[in-house]
Image 1: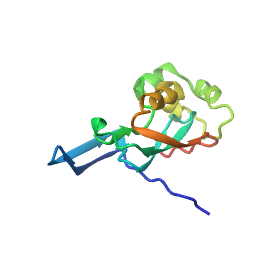
Image 2 (image 1 turned 30 degrees about the vertical axis):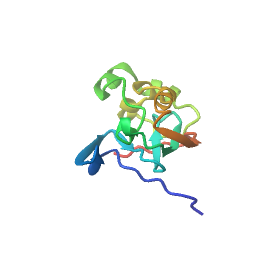
Image 3 (image 1 turned 135 degrees about the horizontal axis):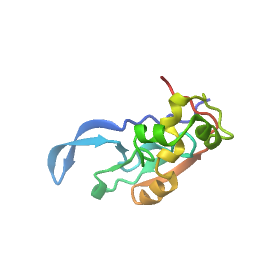
Image 4 (image 1 turned 120 degrees about the vertical axis):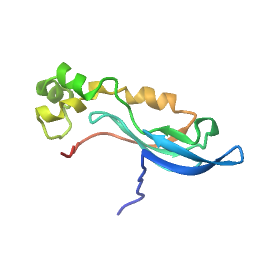
Length: 138
């Protein structure tokens, strides 16, 4: 059966207390990393993902990046890579091949290991997930 479900949003706003004041905190591309809060930090479609537990770092407003983040735009990736490049990069991972997914090539994203190193003061890794299948919707 299911051991635990992790469901976290990465674009939203909520009212929080900062320095004794109620303020609206907007997380755009970030997830809640309050102390003990479970979250998911995904890598690219060809990389690992991490199940994490928040450490409640107030300097980061109890937040952590929600994923690897892009190093190039979708348009740049479509110009720089081919479906064959994507197929080579996805070796060993089941995915739906085709030109329409080239903008998601792992090379268009930051290395997830660097993101996780940068987030060491924000979250504690609970599980590392290895990509075996990727399902990208249309």
